[in-house]
Amino acid sequence: MHLRMDDNFTMALGQMEVVPGRPQLNLDKMLEMIQKAKQKSVDLICFPEMCIGGYLLGDKFLEDSYCEELMRYNNDILEASSNIAIAYGNIYVVKPGNGHHPNKDGRSRKYNAVYVMQDGKYVERIEENGILPVGVQPKTLLPNYRFFDDERYFFSLPDVATDFGMEISDLLSPFLISVGDQKIPVGMELCEDLWCYDYRANGEPINITKILIESGAEKIVNLSASPWTFMKNNARDRRVKYLQQQSVPFVPYYYVNCVGVQNNGKNIVTFDGGSTVYNQNGDPCILSKKGWKEELIIIDNKASFTSKTRDIGNTIREKYLAITNGLKNSTNILGDDPRFVIGLSGGIDSALVAALLVLAFGKEKVIGVNMPSRYNSAKTKNSAKTLAHNLAIDYLVLPIEAMVKDNTAILEQDVQ
Image 1 (cartoon, one colour):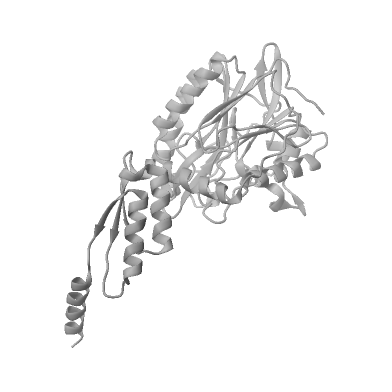
Image 2: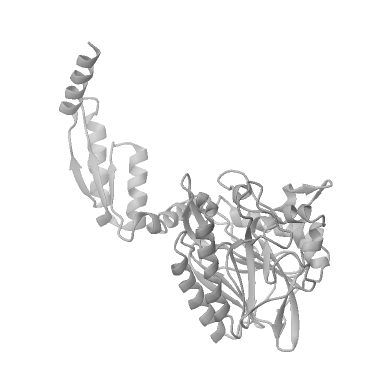
């Protein structure tokens, strides 16, 4: 089947590096992409989840003042929405009133939310519910496993439904994007809303996509902050295929993800992008050309929606790209000009680390150090030296036998 986009509707996916804790930097990137999208006559541009302040911010989300600061950047995007619609992720702090109570911990209620704006205004839904703000949609499903801790910080859409005695479907309605004299209903999701199979209510998955399509959505957009794991694109494809099987007829599905590295204080997590457009068969048809890199993907009337088969590629190469790109993108943590001192034992572990750092940053940024004692053989010392020579890195030998003896004597003296 050969499918094409609507002739009068052009979309863009802004696959961008999100630097946590640097909202002005992130905003500047968004504004640059928005300007480029306007030059291409884009009707709607979509950015990743929590792209203003970052997703893995840990307990910074407990600070009302910081969250309110992030919300102030909404004004800049609202101003930039002249002659274009913009969808992006940011925090939303609920003000008291209108029946809203605090979060479960007594703090201010906060949403991990999609914002939708156009022509200097917040975009309305097909049906407003009088509870959620116009142009703002909370994340429905909150992951709470591995390094995800959404339930600690955010109030979910099922929580809102329970609070007001409503069904989740009563709070999900597509946003109406103006294109000429038409209104195009577009359903908005956030990241985990795609991975709905394991979230159950009344024995069935909480399928946000299905609800939005049944509510009139002609297109679905998923704004993600989805970390890389091995074969992640294939996992995403399988999940979208599941959504298609549950929702017949299906509609075009647009997935936009971030790149870069984020640190929640316990884990350093790398994001691969992988932004993809899926057709009405639930098959990938437009793929990001720049994995791990920023990219503005334009989907216009020339875009083909013919199904494509992903190149699975070499598994070792995929892991290599994940590690080296993760290292390169760590400069927001390490600084703009990182340098590394690596202890070279002559073993495989230190050799691998040194080689990866050279590949990621260059030989001039890495110094190898061998610290032999009487327990190190000539073979391991020669191996370390040979490795440093082959990598063309600076190499130092700092014997520690005398230091070990002195410290041992001190410790034995204390024991006596």
